[in-house]
Image 1 (cartoon, rainbow, N blue to C red):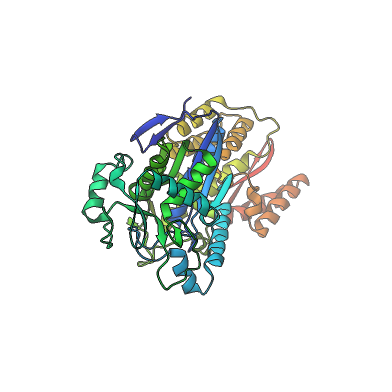
Image 2 (image 1 turned 90 degrees about the horizontal axis):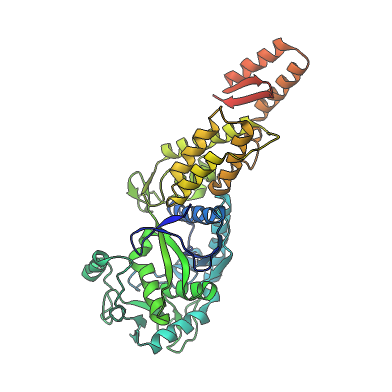
Length: 461
C-alpha cells in the first residue's frame, strides 16, 4: 500500500514517490545547542524518528541528515540581538565552543534515552562555514542580496513564491508587524540575513573572514548549505516543527531555490506544538520541562515517547503530569501483555494484524491507530501466542517503546522476584499449600499469578 504523507507545501496528503526509490533523502532541523532541549522539542524529534522508522519498515531506505546549530541563531527572529550560544556561554563562564559541545552531547544522550535513531550524518554549522559562504556568493551573483551596515540580506521581494509554504495570510502577518525588525536598513520586514557582521570594536568567539567582512552566517543559510551538500540540490523530505513554517523553512526555500533554480525539498512535514496545561511552554511560568525533570519524578523517557504517540503528529498535544502518569501505566501494561506471552517456539506472521498496522502507518503516520491495533491484537486470546509475539516484535521496530528491551520481571522488586521463583519451586515440589500462600502474598502486592499448561504466568492487577 502507498505511503501517504501530509505535505505542507501543497496542504494535502500525497503519496511518497522518492526521486531514487527505494532511497529517501531526509533532512530534519536539529537543535540550537545553547541550553537543554525541552520536551516540546523532543515531540518533534520523536515524530521524525517515527517517520524514519516507518520508511524503513515499509521498504524504503532513508538517508537522514540532521544539523546542529552552534552559531548564527540570534535571540530575535528579526535578525536582531545576540547569538544565543555566545550569550549563554558568557552567562555560564564557558567558551562558546565548549558550551555547544556540552549541550550537543546532552541532546544526543536524551535522544538515545528516547530510542531516537541517530542520523546518518550529524552536521554542525561551524564545520560548514565555507559551504555557507559559497551559497551566499551564488545568491549574490544572481542579484538576490543587498548589504546593510550589519550584514548581507536576502531580498524576499525578488523571490516571487516566498509565501508558498506559509500561505499569504502568514506573509501578511509578517508585513504588518509579526516580525518587524528595528533595523531601518531592511527593505522589507521579511528580508533576512545570510551573513552578519561582527560588531565593531568587539571580537566574537565565533567569527570568520568572508568576502563581505568578518562575521558569521545567518541561521537559515546553514540548513540550505548542508542539506544540499549531503542530499543534492533537490531531495525528498524536509521536517521540523510548525513554528519553522513562516520563517526558517520559508527562508530556506527562498535562498535554496533562488540559488539553484530548482525545487529544494519535495515533501515538507511539520509536527504540531506540545502544550502544557493547554498553554505554550515557557520558562517564565515554570512550564519549561526537560527529560531530566521527568526522570526526577520517576518517569522513564520512553513513557514520554509513548505519550507522544497517543496523538497524531499534526495535532496539538496537551501535557499534564496526570496524562504522563496514564501513559506510564499504559506502557507498563503493554510490556506486561507481551511478557505474559513468554517465549513461543513458533512465531507465525499474523497477516491481518500486520496489514492493519501498515495501513495505519501509511495513512500519514497514524500512530494512535497503530497503537490501538497492537493493544487489540495482544489482548485477542483467539490469536496464537506465537503470532501475537511476532506482531509485537514487528510493531516495536516502529514504535521504539522498549517493549522488548528487557523482560518485565527484571523491572520488578527483588522481593517479588524471589516470591515468583519460590512459587515455581513450591509447585515443582508439589507443595501446593506453600504455592497458594505465595500466590496470596503476590496478590497483596498487586501481582496476579495464573497457572497455565505452558507454565506459571503473571500480570499486574
